[in-house]
Length: 406
Ligand SMILES: *[C@@H]1O[C@H](CO)[C@@H](O)[C@H](O)[C@H]1NC(C)=O
Ligand SMILES: *[C@@H]1O[C@H](CO)[C@@H](O)[C@H](O)[C@H]1NC(C)=O
Ligand SMILES: *[C@@H]1O[C@H](CO)[C@@H](O)[C@H](O)[C@H]1NC(C)=O
Ligand SMILES: *[C@@H]1O[C@H](CO)[C@@H](O)[C@H](O)[C@H]1NC(C)=O
Ligand SMILES: *[C@@H]1O[C@H](CO)[C@@H](O)[C@H](O)[C@H]1NC(C)=O
Ligand SMILES: *[C@@H]1O[C@H](CO)[C@@H](O)[C@H](O)[C@H]1NC(C)=O
Ligand SMILES: *[C@@H]1O[C@H](CO)[C@@H](O)[C@H](O)[C@H]1NC(C)=O
Ligand SMILES: *[C@@H]1O[C@H](CO)[C@@H](O)[C@H](O)[C@H]1NC(C)=O
Ligand SMILES: *[C@@H]1O[C@H](CO)[C@@H](O)[C@H](O)[C@H]1NC(C)=O
Ligand SMILES: *[C@@H]1O[C@H](CO)[C@@H](O)[C@H](O)[C@H]1NC(C)=O
Ligand SMILES: *[C@@H]1O[C@H](CO)[C@@H](O)[C@H](O)[C@H]1NC(C)=O
Ligand SMILES: *[C@@H]1O[C@H](CO)[C@@H](O)[C@H](O)[C@H]1NC(C)=O
Image (cartoon, rainbow, N blue to C red; front, side):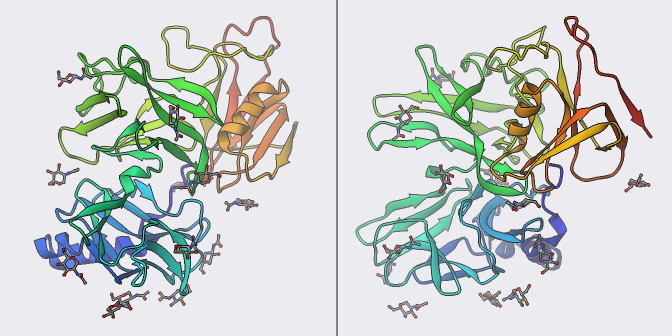
């Protein structure tokens, strides 16, 4: 899962970096072009840069699959987090992809080899422009009768909430804003986790669903202290940054939104394994690794409680290791089903009393389940393994012996 796409293999990184390097931080270059006009085409080597330079929009290719996507990222984020992906479910295999506002229809669309692959907007117009704003919002505006917003990326979130974006719903327009994780760290397709804002009498809370089942809750937003009880690192004593959290509740709209106070790379990102991170420094906000269905002994962690399998106790956990399983006294069972994500593998192993650990394909799909005697060897492989560690209070169960060979 640590195999985030290679930064230096990204052509757009090279382009932007080279421009910065040659031109220094010349404002005309940083400002670049932020608007696509009616009939314009943005090809795989072009990019739009928002007026103040904060955000860049362009095509990027994921080396593990060679699939190409149209995305938005913070221009200077050296982790290249894709804060938005246009075609998450529609993979592009060639570098002949183009983003355009179709000359005839005014529809914002992605074409490949001259064929329309994906329509982003759906209204026919004669004079539209699409602008990447400094907030990271990509907005299609119709200029025919005054300026009218036809479509915007903030209305179609991927896995990341940026300052100013809404999470919640509008009852009048029936628009719902929610986050859906990537399927795996190298596969942007809709994953198994979603995050919603759920308003209530007091305020409201963030709720993560796993395949449609409640998985984790943040606890109610406390407006006075500007915190969520189960997101200790957000505005809590250990947090590095401070942001302003707000919720709106009126007859039409109920949503959560936030603004970053120091302006640097603010984002809340719902990862493919259900964790929430903040910003490129990847501060973990919750929940850790996996929710096992129990609350940790000392404090609530927000995980939704479920019945534990008989063979598991409430301090068993999976530990991530840079290692390989040794198939000497253990057996592996490989399920190549590519609709299985890492969290499915964790749940399988958790519910199988013979399971001692698991790993996944290098692209984050499929499950390799290990039973027998747990033995592994530390190494440099890029895809980590997960081993089940039995807690102290294993309630009379036989503790599986395990050893590390170096
Ligand atoms: C779009 O149409 C205008 C006039 O209607 C024309 O000048 C322009 O060349 C066309 N652009 C493309 C890319 O076809
Ligand atoms: C993309 O368009 C630019 C001009 O806007 C051109 O210089 C470049 O060669 C094109 N790249 C590709 C891959 O077509
Ligand atoms: C991606 O493309 C490169 C260059 O064409 C090729 O060497 C590599 O094997 C491809 N990777 C995958 C996963 O198809
Ligand atoms: C992607 O596909 C999933 C179902 O696999 C669907 O629920 C989701 O709405 C799709 N997302 C987009 C942006 O098309
Ligand atoms: C597209 O990729 C192919 C193979 O990787 C390469 O030969 C070709 O020059 C690329 N085309 C453009 C326009 O970059
Ligand atoms: C895109 O929209 C146009 C115009 O409504 C339609 O003809 C076309 O079939 C759509 N293409 C796709 C891929 O949805
Ligand atoms: C955009 O950049 C400016 C200047 O660096 C900064 O003040 C502003 O907060 C940024 N906006 C966002 C939404 O990050
Ligand atoms: C499109 O709208 C802009 C802004 O209102 C205007 O300046 C431009 O002349 C219009 N173009 C066409 C072709 O109508
Ligand atoms: C939007 O979300 C609310 C609350 O989760 C739900 O009741 C409603 O049915 C959803 N509406 C749509 C159009 O999906
Ligand atoms: C939360 O507190 C802020 C500042 O104290 C206030 O402006 C805002 O209206 C409050 N929001 C709610 C929903 O009470
Ligand atoms: C992931 O890898 C497996 C095994 O190599 C392959 O069967 C599957 O198609 C790949 N999935 C994606 C999305 O690339
Ligand atoms: C692991 O990688 C480090 C640095 O990349 C290298 O120094 C070390 O020798 C490698 N160890 C093994 C067992 O390959």
